[in-house]
Image 1 (cartoon, helix red, strand yellow):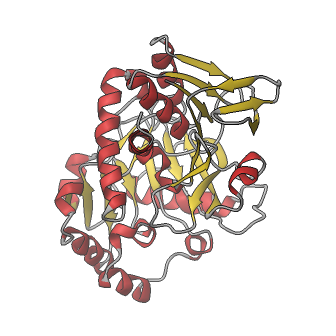
Image 2 (cartoon, one colour):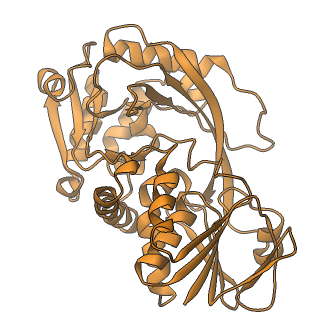
Image 3 (cartoon, one colour):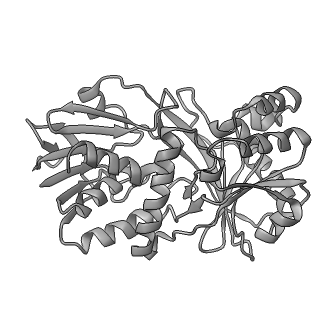
Length: 373
């Protein structure tokens, strides 16, 4: 069987991985020289802790298992089973953490409530003031800027994979074939369009207006910290954002503890992960209204710097990079992904939202199973 995959972000690359793993030949087409979208502009977190229950959590846990297995085979992914800590400072924040521990799926997520001293034993870099921390053992991390490159190198070594960069697919030709902007036709037994946040052009022509929206975020990366940050770190604003923390306690937090005005205005939370070079990836904001701003704003970066420094108890290293990114999210945020048959033999897979890096291996596995690969 021959599979044509369009889009070399993490979702497309994982579809190529699944096809090759099942013994099929893959032609992988990417409009850029390398992927440049949300698959690189993210934290590299395999983030189980905040996922909604049911299908979303099952997908995240299965993806976590797959990431670990692939990471053992492809060291360049930089897979690290580091877990996460969410420090809390007030009684209202602590109550949300305690409510999370009462969830029936808390054990599957690896939740545990740690004292401040216990949290510092897990992550000694957290020298700032806090009362306790929610630990999630199942969270992990990979290196987003190099993951696709490492996976592609492993795929090329199989002899079943062809990568065609700098080619934009313009139309679907008959069944199971696409034509690129060089006029070349690529024919297979199945075509999977993993176009990320590119929802116009060919996607609109094939699928119309799909129930997927684009979301913009801002992030930054620092110089090396100079010491290990042994876990991912979130702040209590993540309780307000992630569905796993919805509870009466969260309602009380929202009613009784106002979010920082900058964080509220930009729909922010703190997420922080250390890269293999020692730098910190820090974010993020959420912008939903189109047209998106074309510039990045300093207020969110200043807010994140204050929060991070308050947890670390020391100045943040120099900021090396700032960037904005755009990802595609199902408008029904309870859906893990939008998967649609748009022509005979042609499927569109997009809209995982902030779950893309976490869930992509399991999303691709589900596609492969449903298509009978």
